[in-house]
Image (tube, rainbow over all chains, first blue to last red; front, side, top):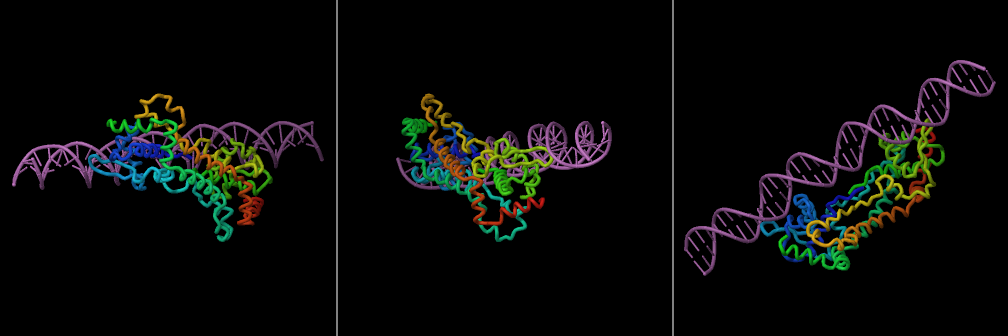
Length: 161
Length: 161
DNA sequence: GGACGGCTACTCGGATATCGCTTGTCCGAGTAAATGCGG
DNA sequence: CCGCATTTACTCGGACAAGCGATATCCGAGTAGCCGTCC
């Protein structure tokens, strides 16, 4: 099981946008340069964030992306779901109904597969943990551990890359 | 993010082996027939379980696989880790050190990336949930929801497939 | 009749192709700003 | 000097290839049981 690297990119971009604040939209190229990422591919992920309503895109010159909501209103789960999709990692194929199970009446499979239920429970716990933290929480934690990181990003942006 | 289907196969096979009990080793072909799975590929996953010490393989005629431990001693996390590997789904690439971060002193990156820490916390919650349930728990839950499922599998096996 | 050697059938185990998805890139549609012109 | 139409440059947005891991398969190594033969 492997999570796409786009999640890390998206989270760092959201954090950067939160740091930069309301200084106008930030184009993809600027964000890509901030982390040395391939601009075109980063753009693809930013579009996913845009469709999820996490960032707002403004086209044209001086355009770019900005956060749609305040950082405290954006959970990590929102970002992860926007990039990776809403589906569960574990997808029950109902193999219990094959082979030996195909002889049993359908009624026996009304209840959810117990294995799938257990995996779903774990996924829910994972989601709950991600939903409990917002971009603002990340901001606060970074401010505690590396106080000048936010100012560094802001200054770099205002200097023009 | 997507979990390999081998996890579902492995879990169902472990449950089947627990149901069949100590009636001698069960070959791959039998397990594959029980769920209509491709035998050769299922064998690959069973080898992973074998290397993880979850099942024991006995070669030769009348050989096959049997559970190494009692069902109560095998957690879902054991099986998932055996199939999917021990690494976390989210892998921090430390992109914070690139671009704007490359100018900062190394000291600033002594602390773990906050984003990676948050993702790791969610992964730990997920693992904790999986580690809390054993094959025996699944057995008990199935016995409550579909009482004759275990007997059905056992009878099918003793009839010879 | 019993024991031994060889043989066969069956199993796991790893090496080998194939497919789909993630990754990565490109070019066109659209928009806001800048510019030149006319009043 | 001010307002407007045109041009321009810059941005997003979706369509288009490539690389890699998961999927799927096959054949060889090894072992247990069985059979024929010999004592």
